[in-house]
Image (cartoon, rainbow, N blue to C red; front, side, top):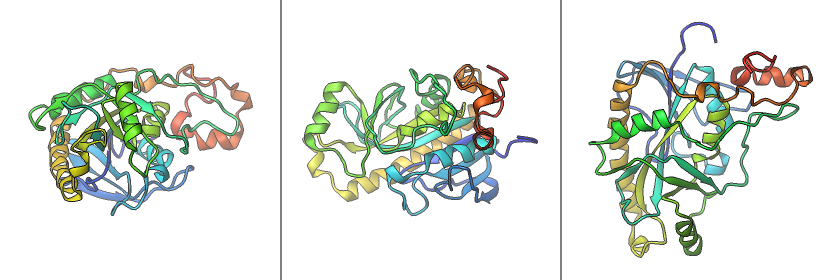
Length: 294
C-alpha cells in the first residue's frame, strides 16, 4: 500500500458503541472489497495523536445480526487502510460470579461454537494454515489491560470467551455446560474476527464489556432490558476513555509476531494459485503469494 496509511489502529464497535467522539481530521469512507461491503462506512480520523479507523460491527442502528456480519469485508477494509492493530469492543455476559456487570475482561482465549460463518480468506485454489493457539495478541491485550485499569470498576486480564452463533441467547442447560467447561464470558462476535485478523497479520485484542450475568445465574431472570441498556451506555463511556488511554500510550511499532503470522503458512505452490485468487488476496497476502517472505 503506497504512501502513508490512512490509519494504523482499527476499532470495531459492538453493541452500544456505534461511533467515536473526539476524532479530528475526520473522513467517512465507503469502501468495497472482494469479499463484499463492510458493515458500514468507516470513519477515519485522529485521536490522541494516532490515526484511527472506526467501524460499527453491526452497522449504525444495529442492523446486522451476529451471523450476518461481513467479517471478511470488515477485516479486509481495515487492512487496506494500513491498519496493523485492531481493538474489538464487545458486549458480553458473565459466566463467573466474580466477573460482574460493568466489569471489563480482556480475554486471552476463545472457544468457538459458531457453525455458519466464513472462517478464512483462503479459498478457491489456495490453502493456508495459520497458528491460532493464542488467538489474541498478548502484546496488545496487555496494553489494553493497562489502559482499562482505573477506568472500569474491575479489570480481569485473562479469560476464555465462548462465542455462540446466536442470535438467540443460551438455554440454561447450555449456559451451565459452558460453565463446566471453564469459560469466563459469552458473546456472539469474537469469531471469526480473531481468525481473520490473524490471517491478515493484524494484532487483535478484545475489550469485553460485561452487561449482565448469563442465564446460569439465579439473578439472570430478574435483569430487565432497561438495566442491560443502562449498562451498555455506561460501558460505552468506559470503552471510550480506555481507548484514549490506550492510544496515548501505544508504542509506534509493534514487536509481537502477529505481523508475520502468514510466513510459511501458505502451503499451495505459488504457480498453482489462480490469477483471480492472487488478485483477490493481494491486500491480505500479496507478499507471500509469489513465494517471497516464506
